Image 1 (cartoon, helix red, strand yellow):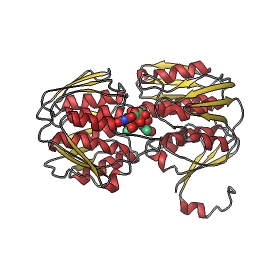
Image 2 (tube, helix red, strand yellow; image 1 turned 30 degrees about the vertical axis):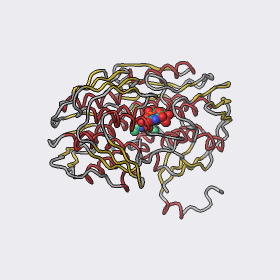
Image 3 (cartoon, helix red, strand yellow; image 1 turned 60 degrees about the horizontal axis):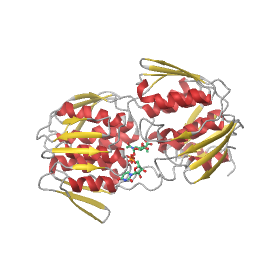
Length: 430
Ligand code: EPU
């Protein structure tokens, strides 16, 4: 297990360049197998989830050439494998996008039931309903999802819930189906638009991405392209919330401010100053924050991925804030850990009551998942004393060179591995 040791009472200040979007990258990479021609993808974040995706592609037979830290060339050639390895797939949820792209390329896919962050129940019924409507036979046995079809056929599919995963998976399959597919009640996230732009550049015919009705006319051939992944709005939002929470001033650079409007609005509401320029946003924490309610919703609402860091910000805001999680059942993994640090939070169902304005204090805590890990890092920067955060492998899945970026903003943060820990016994009594 790897850990962070963070000294508290640190205001972040300076400029930070935002990396490419994790959730766009992990949707775009599986689409590479639609063609046998070479592709070039730039602005890929160097994070564990992207490395896992790249390993799955290699496992399927794609040749990968690294072109620096954030770019790769993919040479899919004549692939034959339809079953990505369980050992790789179980590491990340987005590996299930190979269901859509393998179906499109081969009419067959054998994908293990996926893993991913524990955010409560994460059903895939909408994915399967959609694949079935497109003409796939589905069998689930021995932990595998087996999909097969003679020919994918376009269909009208109404998604019962707004789901990013199903919207992406069905787009990946429908681009190669015979005729037209209409996805209704589709997710509208910028990552979906980025995937649609990538697929359209490859030859797909997708219209309406970014709205809740996506129309896809199937095509037979896809070509190689060059593409740069959009900036990560969740990484940018994490730094913006951290700036406000620590009473510092941080400029996030290379961002698309339109994608960050919900965060900008919430920060202003709690009393932070926010200056928006064409490709950058500067947030200043005034040290005088006031309570505000926070409700998560699909885009363009406040993103569920920023709910844990947003909750930490509210612990610093005077008064009672109500946080409502509308996207996932039970995404409050961070709460027990924050309570160890002295936060006053009470959870009732999908709602958390945050009594803000008190001080947090350094404590040994464990990152329960990726975004809760980010929340604990912000809490550690705010707290009195030293905080040790365990299981930071979760954080490595989604934040590129996080400690380097934080150190450049003035944080005192150190990564230690199990071996180093043996040499510092008793640092924190457990
Ligand atoms: N849902 C269903 N049935 C389905 C699919 C989803 O009921 O077939 C429900 C889910 O249980 C949830 C809601 O629909 O209540 C939304 O789920 P969605 O499918 O949108 O989530 P996801 O695709 O599994 C992606 C991101 C998550 C992010 C959510 C919500 C990726 C790889 N993951 O997950 O990102 O939290 O959308 O915005 O894009 C993260 O980056 O830390 C992360 C967890």
